[in-house]
Each structure stands twice: as structure tokens, then as C-alpha cells.
Length: 385
Length: 162
Image (cartoon, rainbow over all chains, first blue to last red; front, side, top):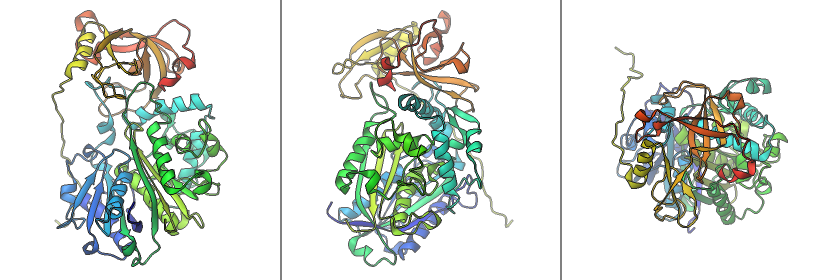
């Protein structure tokens, strides 16, 4: 890539079940103003805006970017909208970064959001006749059989998912922006919570959230004038594959493995578990932590659960994952991927507050979407590439 | 008059005409005759049910029609215990991936006539159809799948379909 690009501003909203205190434009603006303040900039300093969100039916507003343009200061500037299902927060940041890396712009504002309380995402995600038999109940109904397949293939202990959920819910207590917070949560509480889509329990499931995330991405020249420490983008990668094809490995999808391989090659990562200090991974159902540890090459196939059970992915483990509490704690779907990317940037800037990993220098941000078919990832670091 | 309006409810409705195309038309016409029709990818030899007219892996037309059986193997499943807007089935119910005999890709369907705690990966099942008079070109011609009195399929026989 020709030009270097860095994250110089990060902002997010308080995530909640219903942000009825703000409109949709108010929500995205809250995150954008925080990112701009962090970067020491105003809307006038921004060259272009790249916005992302999940399907329009999640709010029931078609092409919402049109009526968000003025709230994001887009008048007279390029505005792009990105959509790649649940991975969109990540791919939106990557599109924004590419505008800087290509030398087109010096400062790009990128924003992702969802205001799920304004419609019903489960309804929007439930595929009906005539496309297939109407038996798949939302995302949980789609992913639960894949989790069962993972458990059977790997021989993972039944409580692996409970352990990840307990870890992420405990981490969320140190994140003031997190939606779901359960002070004093215990293993027994998670393990005894009701099955929603057996084998997925209630407390192993992400919430439906209202929330937004924003970042200011800058060229090396613009980053030099930023008041804070930049997070340098060392590599980005995106891959996709069809939802259905014969022999498709839905538990450990090839698109995810290929995306990680390309990302690591570009960033010079040879041993992810050693080379990353911290990772923010898209885990909407607790078992996906173990599954993605394998897909991302942190663990051998069928051994990702061992990292969970050994505590390797905890704040004090050798490979901390989702110190923010992750998607399990806050899930404004369109923003969930960007939050992973932004939290990775906060870690290498030393700005993650109570959930900071001391001295984090290199971090992975990851998002996936659709039927585990769209992947977006980046590597950010405290040092220039 | 100073209190802000926090929300108003504005219902929306989606109604659309679905044009299934040639391959899915064949499949739907088959269902109306109580048959399950798939198509074979000419490159990989894999049989797709329902057929989409093209191979998702090789982008070539799938022209060879293959009738598959209405028996199959449960490759994986979940037990849905909460209601979902848009689904008319009251929970709890078992939603399964079923690899029909002769097909190379699992098919989503309900399992009934079996206690939930006895549904398992590898279980052999058979389709329960609506009555002959009710058969129509729709997925609803198959009501659900029920257990067959057969030994479970070995894991190796369906592991590549997970």
C-alpha cells in the first residue's frame, strides 16, 4: 500500500437496549463528535465520510445514510455507505482506510451504527418461504446447529461456552460503554440461564443494542499533527464466500482462514498467539471464541476450546480476547465490527481505560457476517509499519 | 407541550412477487408431485437440493436433474425454545440440517414425532408430506421429518457436511 494510515480519533456511544434519548442522526453524531474531539478536529477538517450499517430492515428505514448526511457534516463531501452484513463495521473502516492509503484523502471519518430498538432484527433475519422452509429462528437459530457441530467435532467440554460468556461479561464491567453489565456474575448464573436455541444459553448470547462507533483515519502527514498517539494500520484484509455449497466447512470457514492468512502475510505475523498482545474478535455467541481461535490460527483445529478452558483468552492470560466485553456485551450490529477494530486501536494507543492491557503494542480487530461468509480484519500497532 | 416525542410506531409491510426461475420451478413442481428434485454440478458431481440453476463453487449451469429420496440423516440441529417474529411454529421445536439420501448439501427442516432429548446427530429420518390433495409447489408440501427405525449414520458419513 502506498500511503501509511493511522487511527487518530476513536469515539463510541453508550450502548443500550433503547437509546430513546436520541434520534438516529443524534446517535451517529454522538460517536462522530467523540472521535473528532479525540483527534482534535472538527467536521470542517474531514475530507470524506464512510458509513456502514447492517440491513436497512433492522430499523425499517431504507437508505438511512441519506438523512444522516447532514448530521455527519457531509455537505460538499464524498459520502459512501458500505454493507457486508455483520462484518460491515470492519469493512467500513477498511474502505475508509483505503481512501487514505490510496492517497485520495488525508482525513476520513468513518462511522457505523445500529439502532435495533427501532425495528426487529430477529424478524428481519428470519428467512421464510419461498426461499427455504421457515424453521431458522434469527441468528441464534442459524448458528446454534453450527455450534453443536463444533462441539461434536472438537470434543470440547460442554462448559466452554459458559467460560467465554463469564469472561466477556466480567470484562464488560470495566467498560463504561457496555450495554449488558451483570455485576458479580457467576459461572453458575451463566450455566443455569435458560436455553434459547439449545445449545446456546441466554447468557451466552449477544443483546440487541442501540449504539454507534466512529473513527478518524489519517494520512501520515495528518497523523503527525494529531494530539494523541496514533494506532498505525499495518494490514487489512477482507474475504467472502457463498452461504451454501456442498462440502462447505461452516464451522471453520475457508474465507476466514484465507482472510487471516492474507492479513498475517501483509503484517508479517508468523505466530498470531505470540505476535499479538490483544485481540478483539466478533463473538456474538460465546462458543464462537473457541471456533474463531482456530479459524484465525491461534489454535490448531479442534483445539480452540483449550485456550478458553486454560484461561489464555482472559485479561490475565497470554492472549487476551475481547477485554471490552465484546459483542456478547454490546451488539449494535452494524457497529459491532467497527467496535472490534476501534477497541484494538484503543489498546495500542494505551487508551482502553480500565480494560487496557498494559503495554499492548500490536492488536487484531476481527469481524464476520452473514452465514459466517464475510470476513474483515485489521492489524493495528503502536509503531509505524 | 415541552415534552419531546420519544417515538411513534409506523408499521411497515413487505409483499413481493418471487420469480423462482427454471431450476427452482422444477424443484417446486416436484414437491407438488411428492418428489424432491435436485441438480448435479457438472464439475464436482455434487447434487444440490434445492437447486439454484448454477454451481456456487464453479459458476457453471447445473442442468442434470437428479431425484433424491425423502429419507436422510440429521447432520446437526438446534432446539428452538423462544418465539421468533416471522415464524409461525410455536416453540419449542427442533430445527435440523438434514442430508437427504442422494443429496450433497443439507436441507433445513423440522423434526417431529420424537422427544427433543432423543434427537441426535446422525439420526435417520423420513419426510412426512401433506395429503395428496394438499400437495402444492411449495416447501410446505413437506410438513416435517420423523425418525426412521434405522441405526444412526456414522459420523464419518456426514462430517464433511457440517
